[in-house]
Image (cartoon, rainbow, N blue to C red; front, side):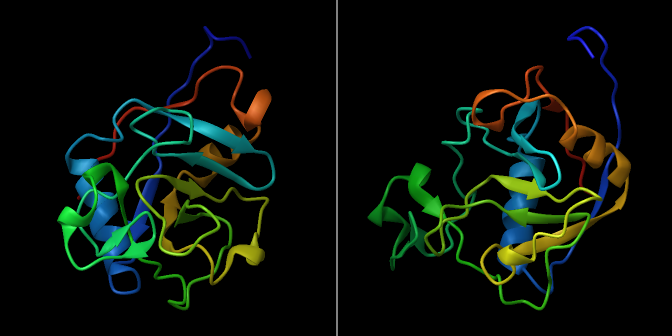
Length: 175
């Protein structure tokens, strides 16, 4: 595939607000405020996941929580004024009974607890990364379009698992 042969696809995701209320609220807030519009899937690993949501840099180094959830870069704080908004993170909700199986959307974060921001990853059909259970918060699952997620996971990548040709998230519609 070359850069000029583009296709578009629709992926529908059911969000699990009762199991991961803060993560769902955060994802919806970023979505309705167009933070995800035209962002790229900056990290794609075949047989594992596709990762996006870095609306700040597009490299995987940016993206913060939209709302205040009591954490600054993973550290519990009593006030949002304890840090700059770009350091706001979401507390883990990873022990919610949901597991990493094909089609789930989960919060990307560092290896430290409570460091989720705006980045997320979606698990393709050929992956079951159970080693992430209890570490990363699952907050939804693809109900339509999983084959498109898997197709994205198959694209050619270069340094840092970045697709050779950009894969863009054109928009997120919440209904």
